[in-house]
Length: 100
Image 1 (tube, helix red, strand yellow):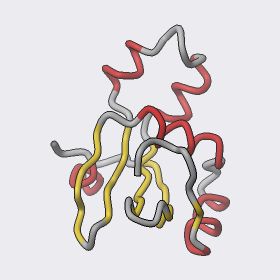
Image 2 (image 1 turned 90 degrees about the vertical axis):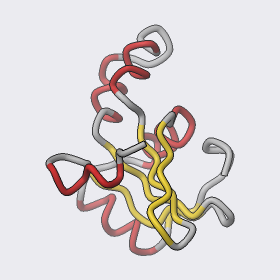
Image 3 (image 1 turned 180 degrees about the vertical axis):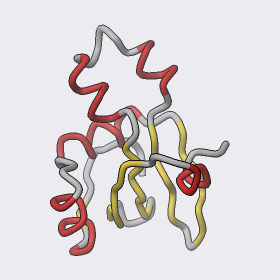
């Protein structure tokens, strides 16, 4: 999947992102601006925007947008463009989704 041209939220993703207060706009921005895409198995990729990238994008995104995207991890199936889930990658367990 190249950026956020088109993506579909799975039923699981719709439920979880609503519960986790992650908007579709934030997911689209993460998919568009992600510079860290990690293969996590089963053809699934974890997409994140690194802190360094957010700093370089200061004129492109607002401070509020950068804050919302800062720790969001989006799991996506690249072939179909389906977003499996999205969550805030905080703490040690989420390192597997941020490694290079």
